[in-house]
Image (cartoon, rainbow, N blue to C red; front, side):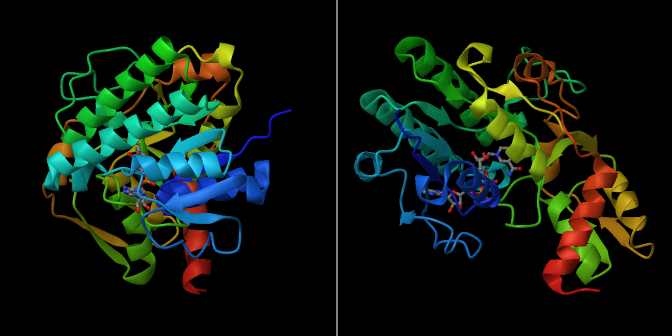
Length: 319
Ligand SMILES: NC(=O)c1ccc[n+]([C@@H]2O[C@H](COP(=O)([O-])OP(=O)(O)OC[C@H]3O[C@@H](n4cnc5c(N)ncnc54)[C@H](O)[C@@H]3O)[C@@H](O)[C@H]2O)c1
């Protein structure tokens, strides 16, 4: 039997750290090679092999895949929405070329499976805002969304044309306490917990009634692994699946925090990220993912808030 050997690219990011640790538990520490441009994240140190890699260097990536007998790649390296708006050409270049490098090596080396995340940012102002369906008008207005939508088309193309088993999820905004977010429009929903504990107050860069689709990292990691473990015949979507956890506004998350920290206060000073948020859906219909591979979220706002505050307190040494 061929042994699974996994390469995680962008392993030191918000998702990468937790996904790498989860994959190591499942596949064995030495069978999951973590890689990133950055220095190894503290939480990964001593847990398995780590290599320094620029995914834009296709030759280096190719050598790594051959040298480590890689059979599956999780590509998480990307420029996120808020950072992307500051440098659109760079975001386009990195988000596209990294994916094309991985897909092409998958074809050349006959890799078993590829995972590449898309985002709810593929939807634009002309998509339905509430319970946005899997298949609908998709006209993104951010460069991040444009690159994710193009990436989805490439994934489907490589699947149909070359039979590459590539799978993808349209993640909502992800909330976690282990590793910091990397420049997205939903980062406020992580920052707010840190500031609530450290300062008792938070200045939010989105307005109070901006509803966005969100998900706790535990659910996102579980969704990723469940999708990747599902039998191939269950995967009917080869672009990217809609995925939903919860939907809330800054006002609602602040009320959830006040349940634990009654004196917590919030103020609002919307910046350029408000426009990005306004272009996105408020909630997502993920019934296709439920139907195909049984997806079901476990965390709502209250449960997530309790868990975030408990773990951040521990991390920060707050009683
Ligand atoms: N975090 C979210 O809320 C969210 C939501 C939707 C989709 N996504 C998608 O999930 C994926 C991972 O997101 P994340 O939040 O972990 O991002 P992140 O910015 O926290 O992490 C990305 C990692 O990739 C690394 N990287 C960047 N350029 C690289 C290169 N050239 N070579 C190798 N590594 C490189 C960075 O150093 C970083 O550690 C991205 O594709 C992102 O678009 C994330």
